[in-house]
Length: 299
Figure 1: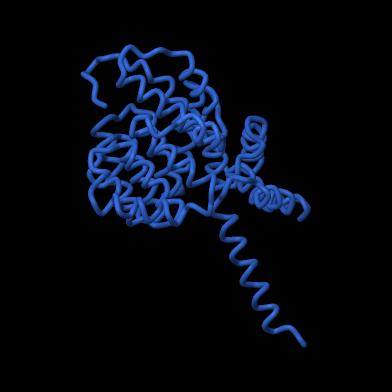
Figure 2 (figure 1 turned 90 degrees about the horizontal axis):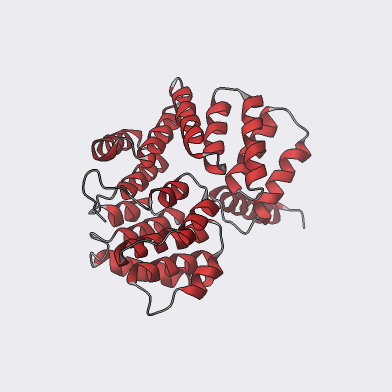
């Protein structure tokens, strides 16, 4: 949705809170504000339901969005259904594949984001990039950049960041993208990433997302006590955040804490209803180890 230069974005606080991971704040603001046009009301509702999805409150989305809702909201319902019901995932992916091949996501920002999110969850990065290909929304660019980093294509991520900077250098997503890229580059860039996260915290308040970002920069610089402080604050904000649990598990080993401490975080990760790539990898490796153990066990 385009706006004229200098026009005030009345949804700025909602979107910004969502981007930095302050999902409850985004929900509170979305419930308070009353946009003057149907277009803005729909955009508000999209961020409202995306915030509920980010909080793993899928039932709210599934119950409130119906077949008569706007197409954009129905696409978000598909995303909630994908995460809420593993048995439906294959059919949902097949449906998205058909839409992708038909070009349904061209100039369809919400549909492209939903498709790319699902494809990235399945580690089908090529299809994620294809879904976003004809979409020049700043958020689509940010997801593109994240996807390139997951593919270890820092070179392409740099080019995407340049596109984001040309489009909107001051956008929060552009700042976050710069921090993500700096982390991937490592070395002296880690300190630059820390400053970006700190600036966003100073402006908009801390969140588990921003604090985990800071913790990663600290771990990369072997500043383990600073990392622990950031992660403890992140735990206070959301004790079930999977990134926080994983970073805590890694950090406990760097701090030479008893092995049961790392195991405790690992157990919380595995028991968490929120899926994390680490948990999927761990479960797959555990299953493979058990298979090999049975194969070579003494009868």
